[in-house]
Length: 370
Image (cartoon, rainbow, N blue to C red; front, side, top):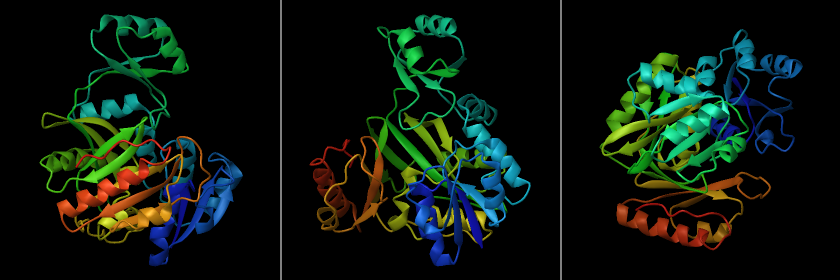
């Protein structure tokens, strides 16, 4: 079995690391010459819409998947005429546009924050001026890790905020007073069978995910699974789907979906019987889905901008080091640490040690909740 991956960054790299023990071979296509996953399979250095490269790519593989959602849907639709493409192009086109995503949530009865779609400066100023609460403006396309967003309050320079978003079509959403941000990793196979990982709680620093912590037996688990299944069935989805929510007084409010393996699922590499990467491959290759049972309290901490001392991290019992072999740069995800334990007290102690170590670097740190 040969899997083609559009994208050879850290997610493509981790997909290949999960698939090689199952005798899966990989062909990775990426426009970046220094893509960190290129050594894990045959590498094609080309743009995602390069027709000649796509022809070469598709002739080498049995199935195609993606490591991130901002890939030309036209390219995906062309590929799907030759080999199976999972997730399907419809899932990517929906996730690429926040308005289409919100409209899908509404059709499926999944609650969201109140929002307004706007594509003109005058309409933006009029709408924001009419509201008496904080809001957040988001570009409809391509925003991630805090990019493509602007917070709006009573004293905001609205023209400057519009310029910050480059004058593109946007959504303006009411800011939600939430108790926590959570996400769930769901998997659906070619037959429509599904499995779910435990709901996780996420904390951010400078708009970038800092820590994901598993919450075993979370009371919102069933609601998260229900909403995820509605979306996957609607899109005839195959593979891993990540769903991000705000928890507001025991009600999940949809934030967004990510049609791919996800940063908030990295804890599953050491924290479960079958990681999100392995289960994504099982799903798209027609294999039985693996168990998502956890091995105890678990968490993932992102390493951003600067790597800490590896040996100091590994000296913390239960900690695992994941280095993406990327050049350091401010705001760049360079790796992650997972940590697990047999009981909550032991876990809290280990997580606190890791947070203390990371506080000694210049990387942004936002303490995980215990």
